[in-house]
Length: 239
Image 1 (spheres, helix red, strand yellow):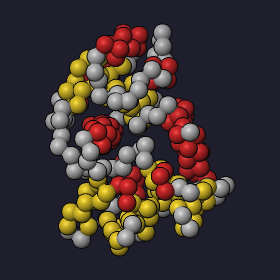
Image 2 (cartoon, rainbow, N blue to C red; image 1 turned 135 degrees about the horizontal axis):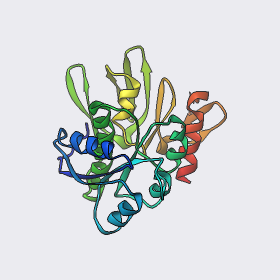
Image 3 (cartoon, rainbow, N blue to C red; image 1 turned 180 degrees about the vertical axis):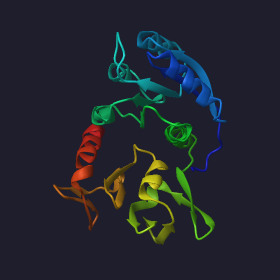
Image 4 (cartoon, rainbow, N blue to C red; image 1 turned 90 degrees about the horizontal axis):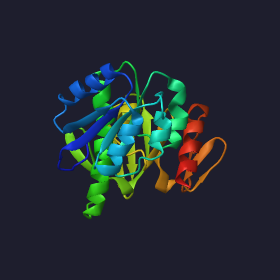
């Protein structure tokens, strides 16, 4: 969890199934930092609402009449962020190119919803912290102590057995008992990318990449086939 004061974050859901809209509205009541604003069955109505109102988070279905979620997503720009809600995993790469923060594969639980929404909250909090001159930070539990990490000082993260080692500038690595996937969920997606089942790297530290490796200065890390497409898409999306 990032070290920011929490405010209330506004959310709308866009889905042509009324049951999903009611379901998301109910889930929002369980999250102390989320204010549910509206639910829309018609994406055109949602687009009009977004043009006139400030919204932090949009839960967005992909397959809808009149306008697809992919089409609507192309109109959504920061500081509003969107999370796709879909029944089909094959939309993931295309949605990633549109900068979706996450994908909720229907049917999903409150815990999965909370992970996705909290990712958006972290992203917004980081950006607001930057505007206020604060250093974006991550707080992790290491050896029973809470350790604050400045994001820009992180070189890369490595998973070894049941631990994640966070390598930093001018400091010893921080050892966290957590899966790399769980660690990735706590990092802003516009700043970090997963390149291997054992490695996460900051975009800002990448000095070179080739077919099967990513260089962090003189350090060479493997780029695995299973993460290569997502890595290349994220690089292309930043250019």
